[in-house]
Image (cartoon, rainbow, N blue to C red; front, side, top):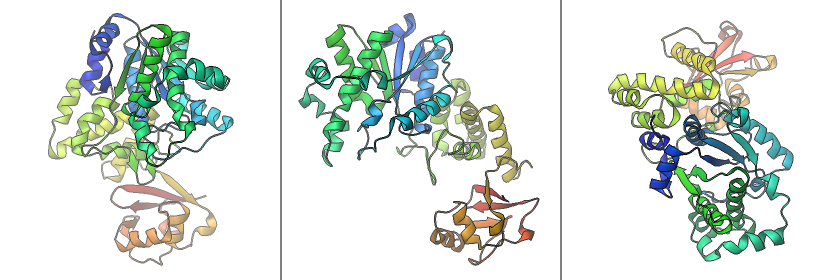
Length: 406
C-alpha cells in the first residue's frame, strides 16, 4: 500500500514540512494523531477549506486519526494570519451555531464515528485560563523579536496590530500543546499562511514536554495565474447549498480554465492519478470531458451524488444536451410583482445588485428572457412570458435562473 506521504506529494498537497525524512517514516510505520484548525467565524466553510478537508480525508483513509479543531476560543480574538484587517468579534451563541454547521460539512469527508476522528473546540481550555498563569507558563517561552519576524504580523504592523491579535500565536501554540497532552497529537497540518503558528506550537511542545512534533502545510487553491480560486460574482464559493447552489457549484468547476483542470482533479477529488493524467492531457474541445468529470466529482463529495446528478442534468439541459430543467436555480417574486418592471424584478431577486447594474447588463446585451435578448430597459414581465409557470432568465453567458411566482 502506498505511503500517504507519497500520495500527498503526488497529488500536490504539500507546500512546506518540518522534518521530511521523519514525517515520511512515521506516516508509513505508525498511526499518527494530527490536527487541522477551522475558524468558526461563519456558518459555512468555503472551497478554500475543502483542500484541508481532503488533506484530512487522505490521512484518515491511510489509518491516521484526525482532530478537527474549531477555534471557539480564538474566534473571539481573530487570527491575523493572511488578513489586513481585524475581524469582528462574535458571541458565544453565534460561534456554537457555526461550529455545528461546520461539523456537518466536515462529516461529508471525515468519519467521526467510534473515535475515528475527533471534533474539539479550543474554547474548552482557552476561555477559563488565568491570564497571569498563562503568561507566566506559556508566554515565557515566546520571543517577541522572533514573533515580529512572522509574516502574519509583519503585514498587520503597517496598519496597526492590536495586542489582542498579538496573543493569537500564543493561543494556537497552546492549542497544539493541549492536544499533544490530551490526545497524543504529534502533527499539525494547515494552510501555508499558518506556518509560523505551527512552528510556534512545535517549539512549545519541545520546551514543555521534551517531545518531538511535526508540521506540514498544504498548498492554497490558486489558478494558473497564481490568484486564489473560489471567487464568484456573488462572493466566495460556499459549501453550504443555501449560499452556493449545487448547480452554481457544479458550473464553477465545469468552467475552470483548461490549465487548472489537473490541479483541481488532483487536490479536490479522489480520481486515481493515472486517470487524472489521461483527462488532463485532452486538448481543445475534448478537455470539456475532463471538466465534466471534475465538476461532477467535486459536487458529489460536497453535496452528494443525487445533487451532482441533478446539477449535471440541469447544465446539460441549458446547453442543449438534455431536457431536465428542474435543477436550474430558481428565484421567486410575489404575485404583486408579476407586471412590475424587469429591472425592479432583477434587483428584488438579487440577480443584479442595483438598477444601474441591470441597466448596464441590458445595454451590453447580456440579458435574455426565454432565450430572447432584452433590449428595452423599461420592459415588464407579462403573463405570456411564464412558460409552464416559470421564466428562464439568462445573465451573461452562463448564469441561468428559473423565475417563478410565489
